[in-house]
Amino acid sequence: MVLGLRVREIWREAVVLAATAGVCLSGGAIQADGTLSAPAAGTIVTAVVSCGLLPARRRAPLMVLLATAVVAVLLAPRGWLNPLIEAPVVVAAYSYALTTSRERRAAGVVVLVSAVLLVAATSSWAQASWQDVSRMGVVAAFPMVAGLLGNSVRHRRAYLAAMAERARRAEDSRDAEARQRVAEERVRIARELHDLVAHQITLANAQAVVAAHLFDVRPEQTRKSLHQLVETTAQALDELRATVGLLRQSGDPAAPGEPAPGLAQLPSLLESFGRAGLLVAVQEEGAARPLSPGVDLTAYRIVQEALTNVTKHAGTDSAQVRLSWDRDSVTVTVVDEGGGTRTATDRPTGYGLIGMRERAAAVGGSASAERRPEGGFRVRAWLPLSPGEAKERTDDGEAGDGS
Image (tube, rainbow, N blue to C red; front, side):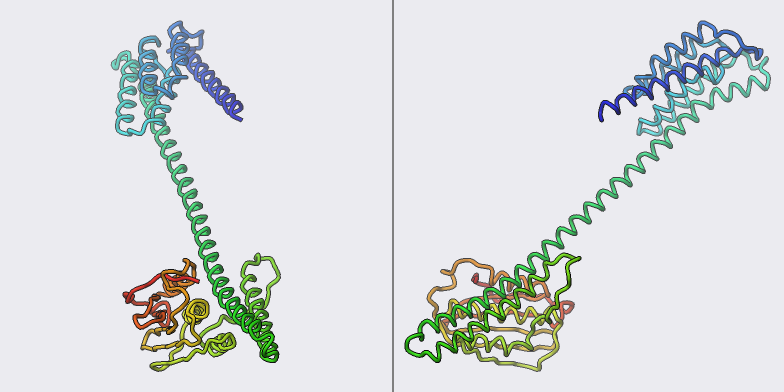
């Protein structure tokens, strides 16, 4: 591939040099009286020397331009410098304007070269006819036109390069945004799975413990506990299936989904904890107000996670859920009075409280968790009625915990 590009570059350069030399020699064949004859020795030397300098125009464009101009002035026929003979100068002027970024300097150099060529093409103004004047004007104009063309091409290339770079950055930005959205969706699904598994498996474990404890002494109660265990695991499988359904590809068959849970499903949630041996009292302060779907789900998940932590860690059979309604927010508080087999600082770091804080922050609220001075643990979450009504709020203090 690289070799092919190199060969094409060499071939293109050879064509440019051959064409330039041919034009220069053709100009030398035209005599002052309009007749054609063999080019003079000066013209041949001009073509050979100038074209020999042109391959270096990309590395040293200014030096090549000045050198070709000097060769044209010194070796071309004096007083009969026609536009064709100065073809190497035109090519050098184009390359200089194309490669340099100093526009004023490039314009000054090209104008100077054009003036020098104009003087070299002038034999005597007194004897000059209008044809001579036209020829001298073209001699002076050719380098300037080549310079303007090279400058225009350079600007065009810079514009196309800027557009390509802008398109590349836009593509990178879209890719980064897509990756961020994928990461956010992954975190959301992971949070849902954590809440689901932590809640249902904790209940199933508690019910299995009760069944094992009563297996020999109270068979009827054991049968009831096992029946509740079957219901709990069946519900867990249904919720897990619905959550994993979010991972389907866009072309996969759509699976029927259930509405996202909210505070309206709070009684059934508390009933499931009651079957596991945890009695939960609910207290409401203020008039209940409608919540946006996202805030409603967040409130439900925070209560679920907090009660799951009580079941796993608190060592008590009772807890309290308090909902305090304000004009534009609701405060959810979950309190237990258990001593716990392990304190909050002794528990291994998990993702329960992290998930609660992330959920609350996602809707513009906040969440905190702390041990109570009188014993037990308290989880408190402040949530706006809708994400757009979020206000600044400082937490009373947060203690680390996890499921």
